[in-house]
Length: 218
Image (cartoon, helix red, strand yellow):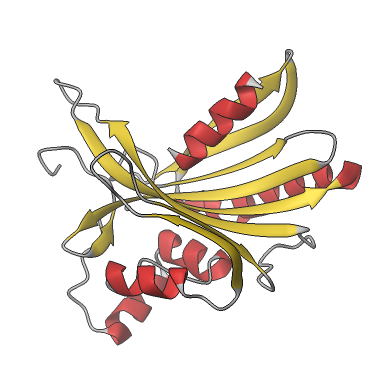
């Protein structure tokens, strides 16, 4: 259970400037791996509009059901979750697809270990039964073949009772190395549930989704 808890702590717990017009953004997106991933897998894309517009689109999406939203307070962070009724961007037939957007704290790699608050935007595809394990592993490999060439990556094997039950791959942009802007993972949660996840780490800057940066902006 520790491995499973660590997996979800990782995946639940981007430096784009958007001074361009929409046509320019579309041109940028053609060669930007972060844009491409969002366009391929996510119904609500935080990287091509103001974040407040994205958030409204996400939380009011008619394709979502079983929604949970906890607004930020003085003592708790923002959290949103919903289940898609018809959105299946995978090569396997997902038994359930969830979307999550949650605030969380991250310790920055500076001399004073500054604490910053980021948003974690995560898509979770479930595949059940024994065949589901192979399904999520294949999606993991497919994603890496398609998008991995644009990043360098670090892998972490997840274990339970010393047996591998999954893997997380953190992707890093060559110009932004201190924190991975996007991660993928697969894990066998139990005898029934297997999941494939994609997670973006987002820093809000003037109502736009940006890459997390060092406290001094470099």
